[in-house]
Image (cartoon, rainbow, N blue to C red):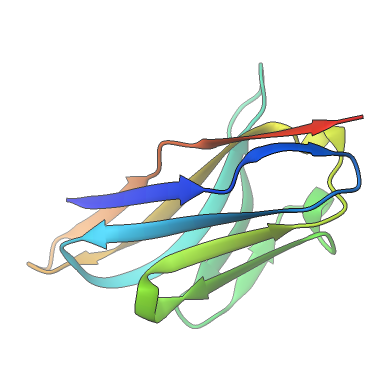
Length: 120
């Protein structure tokens, strides 16, 4: 089993910043990609940003230039630095990771989610 634990959500005013963290633990051999998704009320879950183990990144168009995804491979941790936050960024943010467990079975895991609320 691989567990993902997110921290760093909260309430912030528009224009402010937050940093989310997600740490993976368990029987991990290697992690391929780590990503952040979000789901706003009444909307489908969407990909926000993704980073491979080689450091390649992709971003959803509305967050380009404002959000930065990074990872610490030694700590099996991914971060999402969110700047210039807007009310439309309000959502539950979920961490996702895929890779190989120590007994060479593939895994894909989700965190429990952390709420980000951006006020006007």
